Length: 203
Image (cartoon, rainbow, N blue to C red; front, side, top):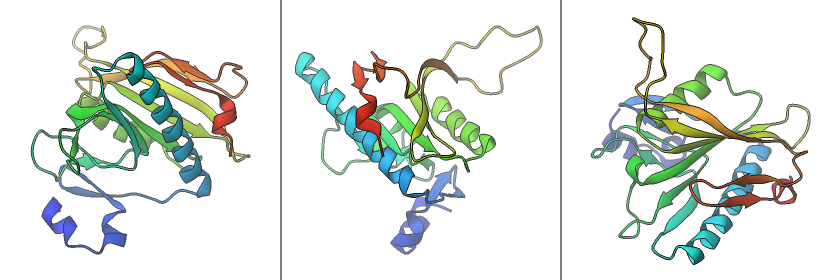
């Protein structure tokens, strides 16, 4: 399917689709907790981005949710829709967000998400060169976040045995992990200083 064909679909159908090199991938709507924790992460990142910009006025970042990130430099038939993201401010309103604009993308994962689906999407973000990827894992038995993990983009291939080549040209490496018992909450300095108390991430 092309972007042009996608635009001709009813909105309630089109908003449930990602295009992976023109292939249709259906997005499942998560439980209410999924939307709530997505919004809480967005709110925390938005506050931190604004605080960082007061100290670095030459920088401009926007935090948002469920926005298409187009992976190529041109065209629109290859995109992902992260649950939350931070991107550089764009020159004009209503512009498309390209992977080259994105600093951080994140997914809120409920227990029903499969590891293969998670890894496939993560691999596409990495191949597009997005510097930071976050995973928010929800608890299986409670309306709560179990773990937040931050991954940094590794662009230099790891050292592998002779004759073995990496499956993907770029990969994410875990660079931070937080659980509710961490008294400082989420505390991380990249791509700008991020501090989000756990009290702000409760359902």
